[in-house]
Length: 430
Image (cartoon, rainbow, N blue to C red; front, side, top):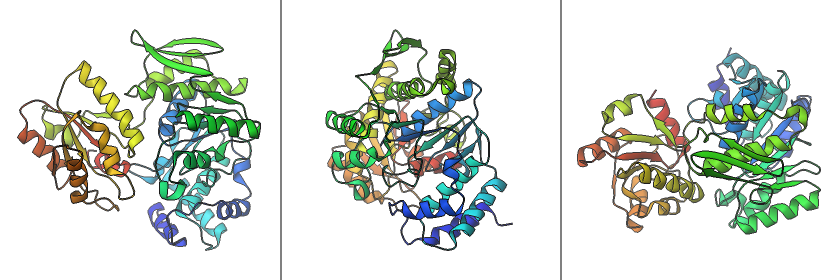
């Protein structure tokens, strides 16, 4: 029997483009597979630019705290493909993944289809054949023409904060991007809208009204805030006094709140108790999202001289949230901040780094081996253009060694700029 990586590599050859947004190819494949998308447990469909993975992680943790069985689909993966498909709470097994991929490949019959489309079909097939209570489905790219947008009537749609990203596929303006992401709004299905710029919020609520979907909007129908070291969620049903979310950063208040607002919009049979919400907040896990590295070779290399953090955010909107989090950490526990930074070519390096002006002491730019990434010369010039002190390093370990050799103070080091870089760090760090 072939291994999953061999099949995944073979599937890459079915379409000349990695990304080609449309729905007809996956719809034809799903028909050939017997429409597995119609046989899923109730679906929560989650789109947006930033925070959708974190919102999904909170929803998963809260449902599991209630003893519910959860399917979850996310992308991209960090270390191994199996992370993308969580079946009844666990990463899909190798045998199960191979079986689903081979069946999708056979049903597709060699027709052109993108890698994301056929692997999304494999996930839906896996979910359709294993009993669970809820399915959490994260949009891959955009919304309207994303391969996940094949669920006719989800239990809820969720749109987390929208910012500029993937402009070559979604449009040059935030309005165009919001229009594309609004494609997951369905008639008669509640849509939970996270924090948005005014123009985006207005556009999304107008589309929801046109489609006859109830919009449940941050700042209007629900809100979150921190008070005396506690997390407060409030809506028309009342106020919840909760522990702070388990994921680091003030932006996680809104992500956790989005999950709670979504739970409260579900039918009674799918809701969970306040205690389950509290447990989920404390047990949530979502790697490479402002993750503190506390063990492994990189931590050993630091020899207790540095505080190491890892984040895969890769656009200016994410950088702003991260810089706020780092500023908060600086207020509580001052340390000089250094970035180890790598980024893919289709991302805005200068826009990302601008958020760290006046905050980061130094930037070490690194390549991302095996990926179509900015070279270190380009990243160095982007940092210097912003007036940031920078130098080049051969890789993360080299950058870490350079920082530690140069600095007397114990630094705070954030490895950032790409989920692909984050995945390599997690793999190499064990």
